[in-house]
Length: 110
Length: 112
Image 1: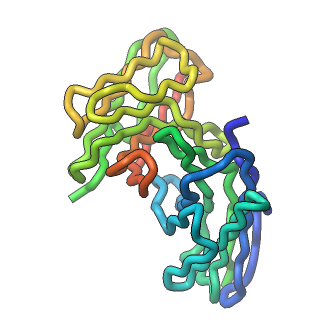
Image 2: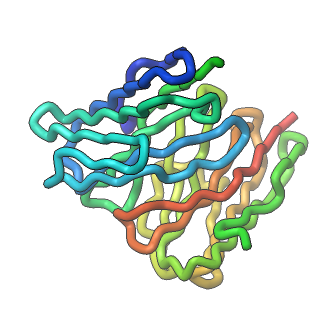
């Protein structure tokens, strides 16, 4: 299958809590990216982590990459209602394409 | 200014018809893509073009024919539409194949 696995499929938290989403993949990668998709909208790039990097930060986002376990995680700290969206990881390998995971639907409630 | 724009945003058509979706990017990128997102939100790549040349064709039925008149445009023509073609189609572009991709807002295609 082209799809990586993401878990959980759905996550519901309260505002102010942290949200952690995980992504696993099967083949070697050049880099791994995370995207957000608000309902009815296109995808927005959040962060890119290269295969030789282990951790990257951007604002309230923290991404880790473990190539030995072929997995990545996205942590959103101090979540806000506006973070409600679907989050996708996307892998790039040797070919010029992004292969997306199955996505995690995050719901942040007040 | 919209970076990646695709038209139309919504498309409702009958089975058997032929339709086109247009995509344009003003980012100066050399790689463009078409993705299909189904009702379960799975995103699957269909085509990738680099400098007007097709580099990825992911076993898409030949009813789907992409056309890239120049590196800023990648259009998708679909012949003999089927019910299963109903989905949201996203155009995207990137500077190189392995870098950040910018997505259009999507075209929701409904075949009735």
